[in-house]
Amino acid sequence: MHKNGLIYLIFHFPLYLSFSTSDVLENEPLKYRLLIKLALDSGARRGEITGLTWEDINFNNSTMNINKSTQYIKELGIFEKETKTQTSNRIIYLSKTTLDILKMYKKEQLEKQIRL
Image (cartoon, rainbow, N blue to C red):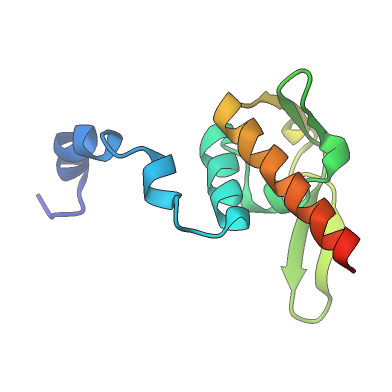
């Protein structure tokens, strides 16, 4: 089977698991680490992740609320819209690692606002 085929993936999957996403991403900017961790932790679509606001994150319950999405169309730019389907609106539990990165990013955003 081709190198990128299913058999290759199944055979090498334990190797992929041996690398922590934290290790692989540690030198990346915080916003990119956060985007990747949110995607891996939640399974949310790209537009759902970019549509999140701080009001959608509940640090006390370790959850995020998916209730909107963003989309880019050349003629319109970036805009907010409803999720793909009504059942796409959901609450997702997040890992402690992802919540820690969210807290760091929120702190970074607040510090940048203060400097402005």
